[in-house]
Image (cartoon, rainbow, N blue to C red; front, side, top):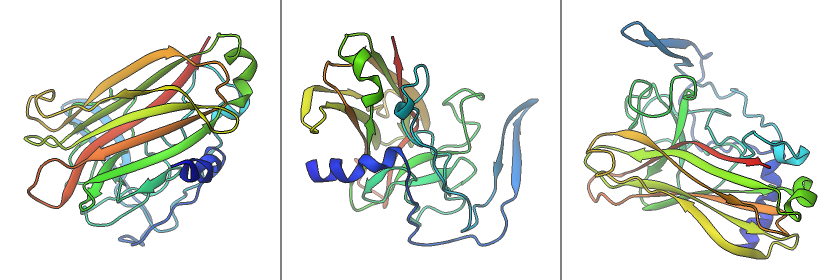
Length: 256
């Protein structure tokens, strides 16, 4: 795990997308989805192979407060799976173990839709993360965020965090997602205990396919210089071949 953490530190400044298969080569078009008189979102109906996957550095590198420091926590950077659920499109900005995939809310082979219950219309983008094809039954996405720009405030016990995400799965199944993070020192040694939110199980969702909001807050521990974030999506339901652990809008926001 320490090797993985060291290898993933660079994901806060740049990351490349690895696509093992391509399903679209035409220019992307967009579709506006409406429910009654409410406009939900205008999203691409396809993602060509040359669709931009460039990431911006984490705001943590400049010591920004009040903004999400997770790179591509919303699944909106890079290509999203627009049809079917058997292709692996590695989420941009994350180190992935397994077949976690960015998938479009317009993809009818996915679990969630733009009109399903989840993030508000102002927060919901075009894509979310899904566990993907199984096996494996457990898929993880990880990134390590450099927070040395906050060092003076952190060591003065002035920095607080808020960890949040929308998570859920398919109706009638306990496939799930959860998020955890760990404080790390300058030498990547673990500081204190990990913090975790989730999972949201079928009973929590009332037997329906939807995403629900979960959050946790606290103080960033003294000597923290990195934060290691792990999203874990687990397949519990034994029928079928898809890990239906779903998650969107993974955020860590610092305040003081």
